[in-house]
Length: 350
Image (cartoon, rainbow, N blue to C red; front, side, top):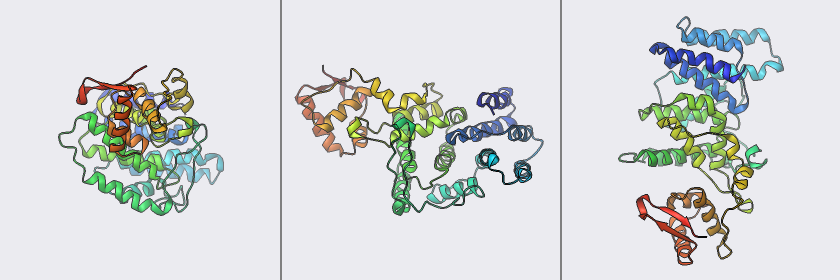
């Protein structure tokens, strides 16, 4: 089904503003939109059934029963597999998003995966037990380096514990978004599930954000789920030989749109490593820079207001090392700081 068509049909319920229907319609928009992550499209039957649910004619259990019966009648035919996954997972996401229950833990992540994909993937609700790579078109078929399967439990426990003790009190929205981006990016990079990882991460994220009282703009996920995944890829990929570095700015733009109704343009092609490099034809290159210092130059050229802490994260160096590099670059007249520490920016001197 055409994306614009189902989106338009569901958005009509939101425009009408009837409270009992708006929340259901938003959950359905998000659930169906997230299928785009894996190139899946819902059927007309799913959309018609969803509309009956939104209108209050049937409950979510009846939706599940109808979808299950529909595919039982189709039989185990390969041509229906992708439609079946799109329809069933959309229903399950809608159900989970409609529930208030939530537990901030790796077990919740595991539970969400099981609920979404039971009967679809044999490994539903299980961590992967092998290592793998995934070719990404935005990386010219290169791959992100994911956590080794033996360390999945430890990596998740560490990331969750770090987030659990972190305090958002007195943080600005900018600071909160940067931290949330880093947390969810780390969880995704662990990649505990070989299939369905991004959809599981997205559902977990939405549920987590709601515990903060955020008024999540569901349209952002509904319309940009593929962008969300690619932004996670770029946040976790670096290749020094190709002069490409981890870049979380794309994910930050997604979060700003999601949480603050900002209207950043979210285009997948902007994240392609060739697109980025073509935009840097006139980028600054300094012969008296080390490899690491050149990496810093590339980063601050894209984001002059970036903090040294974020640069350190991007190039996997300590903050002390980054400060030493940048002090040396200032001494050599390569960069300078203008307008102070808090609201200043880095200037690359030509």
